[in-house]
Image (tube, rainbow, N blue to C red; front, side, top):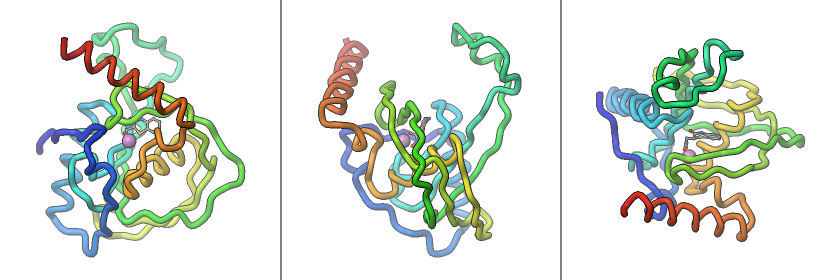
Length: 188
Ligand code: GNR
Ligand code: NI
């Protein structure tokens, strides 16, 4: 297993359209294991293969909710590392959305390819989707909540779309300026 480099904007590879997986192989399963390791290390709740430079329609998601939802929020990295999470790793290969609700939900989204920047995005609150898992088995399910939001965010990556593309130009430009500023501060 290995932690892979996550591509960040403005890398043009993030704008590629990813190709369907024809047959799920051991190479795919090895990539998926590395994607989980990379996502947990980041940390993030989802990762698309293109974010590690592989233009195939493969996503991993683990919402990693705290085991004790009433526990106080961590105020330091040391405290954050002590919190126990419920793991629910999910793999989505060749996902397709077959239905979406008219009702929208707003979530303050972030993206590992747009580091440390967050903005509210409107998306359908509920979706129905089909996909394959890492064994090649087919799934068809209705999803809601953060899982529906996260799957839509990840599926956008397969089309070369980032969450910032859903913002007004004004909000997007402000966010990109903040990103530039934080990168300059880090480099200094
Ligand atoms: O870690 C992530 N958090 C997140 C929060 C709200 C909506 C979507 C996401 S996905 C993101 C990781 C990532 O960039 N996946 O592509
Ligand atoms: Ni993302």
